Length: 274
Figure 1 (tube, rainbow, N blue to C red):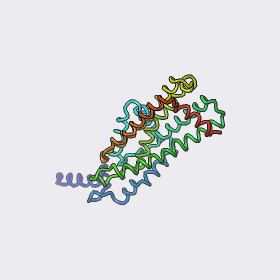
Figure 2 (spheres, helix red, strand yellow):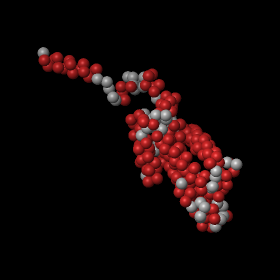
Figure 3 (cartoon, one colour):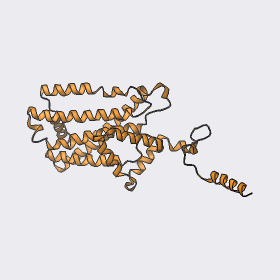
Figure 4 (tube, helix red, strand yellow):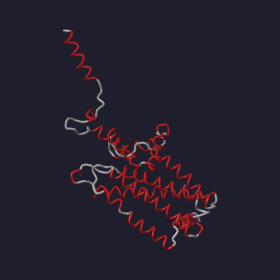
């Protein structure tokens, strides 16, 4: 009798305990029930992300800083974390806006430094900051992310994986990952060479400046390639490395003709704030 009662209590306790596996959120045919499916829609994910954007205590800035460091030293490790997020939270895109917040801070500080180096006034620097944040970073980022999202879903998804698609949020994350090294190289490291070397109208000047541009844009292309090649349901992602050929050709041509990309950028910045 005691054995029967123990077994009965055991099975009752098994039924009462909440399950933490993925199967608990699925119906018998393996499809998410309506409540859990609503949590996985793009709108629900976007709402959750934007809501956390104003709750700094819920952001993991230490982990975001770790990602920024490894985007320079080992970007593959950053995308391995995206794999882990997919397995644990069923989404590829970031659900924590800490990276975006730190990137915005970097962008503000470096742009103020650019304004100082170019001898801009206070209001000119503020105007430049607004241009760089809302046009160069956000506006161009939205355009590039949407374009890459469309191209990858239209042409790069494997035929046997048509049930999968690239999340727009992930495409935007890939852009942010690639944009950060470019920002540091062109808006921070380059500042130390602009007035005394790069803008001197000498061969050394545009050699140093154009080489920094080559490294920065090349890093953007490479990190973007890593982002999409990390998705197992995409094919032929190596085509994302093809822009390296015209980039190197343009670099060689610029040295031969004496083009100074940094000088053009500074002139464009000054024209913007007039």
